[in-house]
Image (cartoon, rainbow, N blue to C red):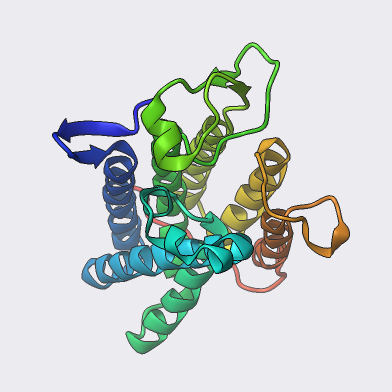
Length: 265
């Protein structure tokens, strides 16, 4: 596709990084608006979003290293290659580390845990969608060979050189599958957040729906790492199955009455 947005000699601006930055900016606007509706200090919400973004990037990279441990152990120089730096990492790793940090930050700053998480969930969905457009532009996170009419074929040599995507082979556009899923999820969560809901319900819906979508999409992804436990699922799919459980609890827990959010603000 188009891994380089702008080029000046040997220097170039990666399309992926630009779209990730754009996704963060859009997500932040969503978070600020929903935080104000919920009576959460927008300045604290902004600081939390920035720190979560940084810890999320770190977590995504760390889990990527875990997935490809043998490669990086045998060839540690690969850690510092452009392909590794350009790679998006594994989203679930970023989600887990960002969630852990967010919990600590909210406790330290006396922010309401579940209402704050509800304000962030739609922003994470829209930011994830825009970021996946960056993956599509870069060529990373590509799918398996595809014989469907909507298959995509990467032909840009820069994409192969930077991220290793196969060229001139029709592939499942798994990046776009996830873009569509996350955009639909954002629209649903945005609508639901403006209605009466129990604290934690929006977060729960996000965990359940996004995990189900990722679990299905993983069947069409190209995987080079060994499957854990000798089973048919990738490690990412196992993580998705685990994340569904707290999501189901938050959606269907019997206590905590629904709270009406003022949608006119």
